[in-house]
Image (cartoon, one colour):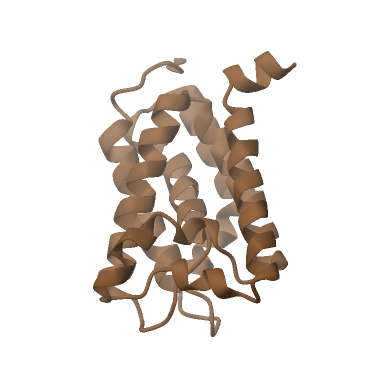
Length: 189
């Protein structure tokens, strides 16, 4: 079973979620002190925090919401392989984080929402760049079950980084355009 989970990348996703859980536990014990490792727009000292911000969450509910999204959309992305998942995730985290750093509101932006929205838009838009049965099926399934996420890119909730959502989604589309044609492992016609 462990070999199957490792081979298909599920073990990797579970390890990512474990790190997020441990970071949240440390954040709770430190009375929220780890929030400083979020993205502070246009503050030079916080540029490296583009890589830490996805692992820091405001509370357990915030983590639970993002953990569910990471689990679902990571597994859907891993259908194309671990290398594709790693490269797409890196592009989403870096580009989405840089855009938040450049254009975000003056607040501390934390959480994996940008990553989740990036993987979400990636799974949808891959069908545009590689028209295969599996891509179209995954895209339709994601739109049917999670199409309402599009509302998350709008500034409709105070205290929520819609910038992270919007820029993550944009980075996911760019990841689909950049990496989509390189990986034809699942090309069913």
